[in-house]
Length: 247
Image (tube, rainbow, N blue to C red; front, side, top):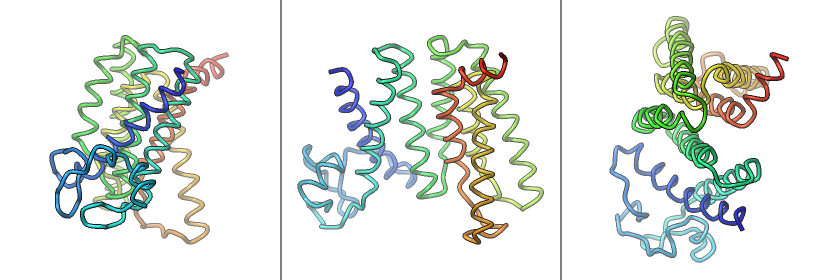
């Protein structure tokens, strides 16, 4: 029952993520699910992209415009993530709840970065404060604070280096605040695992894109998804990786 409940909660959180991903990049106050053209609210049974896909073939009942598949994918991915977290933790706990919040935030950041090339401060900054506040339930306050400092310092240096080598916009400052959030969430020393995993993933994917000529040297590639990959590794297996390395 706990596993099924986690899937249901994940599905609903995925619906909330879709609302925030639609409204926040437009600097618009989040509202209940609504038609993007007319602004009319959708009936409760159509709040989820999955139910709209099943009942209206993914079309808005007011204007008839298609939703696309993103709402459904986000909801299913969030539900699957929450189910995985339940399976890994095995029981409801403060650490499970906090980790679920982190993953929900990371999914939202992934969507906005992929769709708009935006990592919004309105998402990362409150999340950093949240991570420091709940650190006694996950790592320790000192570990979270040092992790945030390391994440900020490393990516602020990369931000400055990228701007110097490739010009303004090579890396957005949102990546710096995201690295700070990751450091606060996983703490020190796991932040090193998370950042190295993200940097390694980004380097390998970028190298593949260059070799296959899908991107050029000066092409801009969203870096947030790579950092988020490292964050997931750090949250799920970072402590084990650190223990393995030290042993």
